[in-house]
Every structure is written in C-alpha cells, then in structure tokens.
Length: 77
Image 1 (cartoon, rainbow, N blue to C red):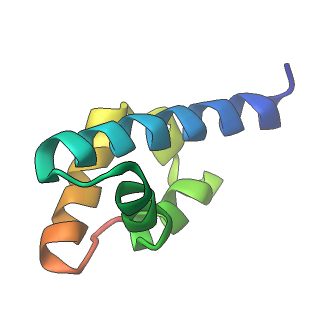
Image 2 (image 1 turned 45 degrees about the horizontal axis):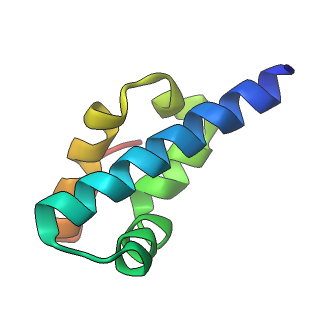
C-alpha cells in the first residue's frame, strides 16, 4: 500500500465515522450527514495533508465538524 493509499484510507475512515456521529447526534439521514461533511470547511482541511488531520482520531476531528455545524465556523487551519 502506498503512502497516498494509506492517507486516503485514513481520511475515508474519518468521514465514515463522522457520518455515523452526525446521524446519531443530530438525527440526520445518510445523505444529509454526507452533505454536511462534504460542504464543510473542515472537509477541506481534512483533505489538506499539511494539516495532519488525517492522523487524528475520528472523534477528535468530529469535534471540529460539530462546532462548524452548530456555529457555522471552523477553527482548523
């Protein structure tokens, strides 16, 4: 497995878990939860390898997403 594949796997895992967290915490259905994630500033930060977010736990990254979802802003660089 190449480094790019490893990064992609970790990012996908985080997105999968955050989807489940949104569905559980806010009662969103699958399409709604994915829309929240893929339209978020956090998702852009997650895709940027320089942030290193893909190395964090899904729960850690979700806390930033939850804040963005509730307040409309995200503080991840």
